[in-house]
Length: 572
Image (tube, rainbow, N blue to C red; front, top):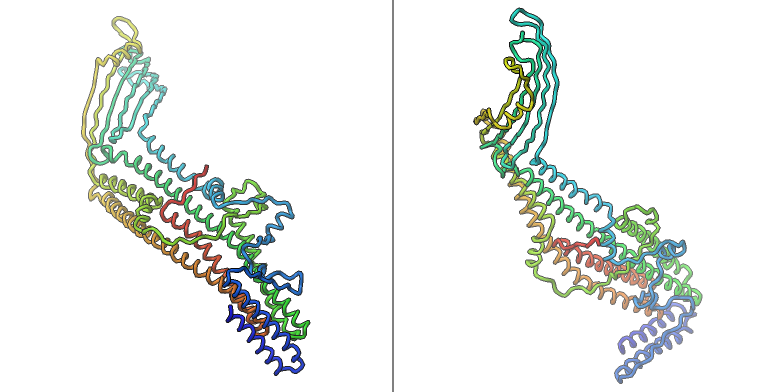
């Protein structure tokens, strides 16, 4: 402090000498400047002596000539001073809009429940589940039936072929089911009634028939057995799992977007205060220049540069205020579903602090990579895509085989008609008993074989399916490498931002010191308004870099969870 005192005293003397050489009319001010510098020296030296003796020197705060001028603490934006009300908050209070203080956790939970994009993405797993039910429905049994009536009349051709008029009524009732082995089982019952008025009495006029039949067709090569026929169900199940993993990925993408939007809003609000503090310093500089002009220590044209600086700071403040409204709309779009039109009038005030204590160390990336490979939904989705492609390859390979089917059939018939000899009339009950008792069975077994000449279509599909499997495997391998790279990048970003925050914090401290020093030097005449403006701009830029680094660090924390697949929020 002694050296600072000597510096201020020497600056005052040199400045007084310069003024003496430049204008004789200002010789009277040498005494004033010398006394001012000497007073500063004595005050600083006494403070050092008191500190060395363990005492507590009382700091003397110079009283500004303008009572309405902001203090030095306010000019430099002391973080302990109460924060200034933002214009967007003041406007919401004046208009009576709803005010919502929201933390980052509350924003994530609300976005998880009400985000429109997530509501739309939620329908994709539902569709995939319906596709799975559709595939499983192929093995459900089926009832079928038919009935009909026909009538015919033939002309009289000769004595042996008289005119015949006949009526036929028949029906079919059956049950069939596709088996998981690829076979098709069919069980049917076919009753019929035939009536004719011709035949010169050589044939009965009425006849009833009843038939039970069962058939089973089983592919032995192409299209046979459970692995082939359950392939569609298995593929649908994998697609359902893939849709759920894709939805989980969409949820995490949306959560990361909400995190970024939240901290961007916090940044713009804090950045407005930084710009406002720079404006306060510019206004104070303009006040000092006006005071010097009043004392005839500066020319009136010297205030032009200060006025330009104030105008530039006000322009920056307007842009900063508009940025707050833009980021607020971005966050509203992510948190509300639009069911309430008044959401655009809600004043969102994030209350989670952006200030952060950077980490001093990070865990080894190998552990985080293992976590990422276990939990990342995009990797699980690609694994399901590989499994789906392998099932398609199995089907395509099986289709190359020739068609060889075994067909078996069994039936039992029953017939009842009028007996011309005894005169008894037939009935359907007798025919039904004969068919049910299997008095007249009939069965058969056969093999059917077919194969296309060349079979190029099936072979091409098989080769294409094999290529698709290899492509999906390579994509999965590439995604695994990307996950490892992203984890390493996220860790490096955490480390880099931790160092940047410490560096920019020191830059802000030094910029504040430089600005205070330059202001004192200007008061004793050893500096210019331009230098004060330059130091003010350096402080403005340093604070902006610190805010941006803090914003990036907060986002990087969530990014690290995201690349591990752990950025999840319970919607409840």
